[in-house]
Image 1 (cartoon, one colour):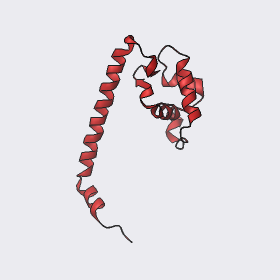
Image 2 (cartoon, one colour):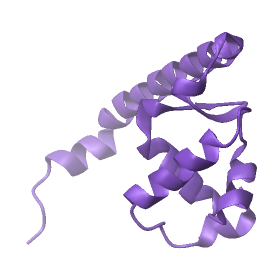
Image 3 (cartoon, helix red, strand yellow):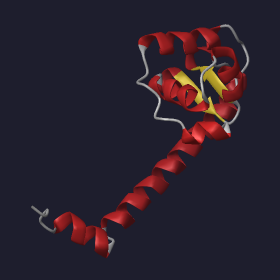
Length: 118
């Protein structure tokens, strides 16, 4: 991530054109493309690449090796796919655990159950 990206406004909504552009970039490469590769190729900031990749859902594999269209994955990509699945499952467990802990924090309980001030 580029340091300036930390302080930019939220990226605009992902468009169909953005999704087509990312898909095209990935179709032109047989190898995994890193986020920095995609930033350089598209001129997009880091956050936009991540947002567009997320918008593609399961049509794209987002792994430690980079990005690849799911339909272009080969048997050689199985270890990266398995690692991606483990990573996302672990992140989901951590997020759920945090949400459960936050939900029962006394101050949060008080805020959520007290009437809103007029």
